[in-house]
Length: 333
Image (tube, rainbow, N blue to C red; front, side, top):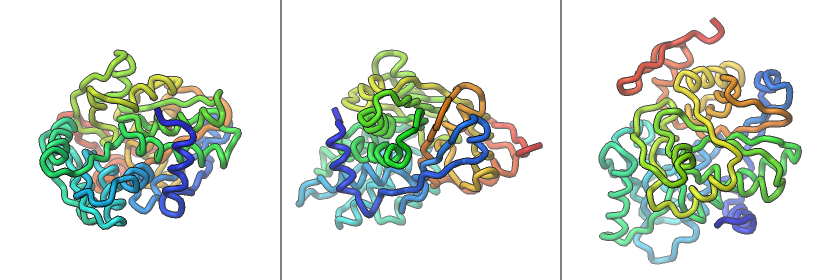
């Protein structure tokens, strides 16, 4: 398992490139909970997402002479791997499903990586990634189930506790579990009694359902405002499932409507443009599904979103997600 020493080593590896993002108060959310509510702004990373931390740490460990790296991604991990590989002058191939928004595909290509579109699920994209490993000798950089990746994401927890040792709760967007596992490991190593909650959308929440089942389970992937949280955790998951099951105090789910509203809150109250995945922590609190006491922080994980969709959300229009429609609502009306 990843330990505090691994995370401290990762902090040294990424220093000056992917660290020291701001931790700022949200006056609106602070008033709602009656205590400081803080936002860790990983949307301010050079690639617009926290995934750069784990990718940099992982690519830095790839042996010289390796033909290149590959990964399976819903978007932000692919950006991180593309950026890190470009810094080392390495070939990068990012495998994605047809459900990934075009804006994220274009962003990865702009960083110099090749993109392979394979099937309509993360599992299909993962199969293409493994083919590249077997047939072309590329080294896989897992988006969540890799020691170096989890350690890299854990540096967020180090920074949050260094800035605010009095934090009582951390709310973490939960997908494959690399972020949640790393942050929880770092936070609980420093402050064992801190509460760490993993939060996902209620349509295709692989880690939440896997923890409930006691084993990794497959989920059907569907379009979501929190598309970055989509995808399975892998039936042969080696690290992130066990760490999330051990370290997270609880996990819970929020609806597309609750995500929609939280995106509006973050935009109108804090003037922040962010992906739907970023606001699940706010959504859990605003909906009343999660009660928090004392200083609380959540991670604004990224800003790489479809701006047409975002515009529809903040202007109160309906949003169509496959065969599901989120009815629009004007903020403050």
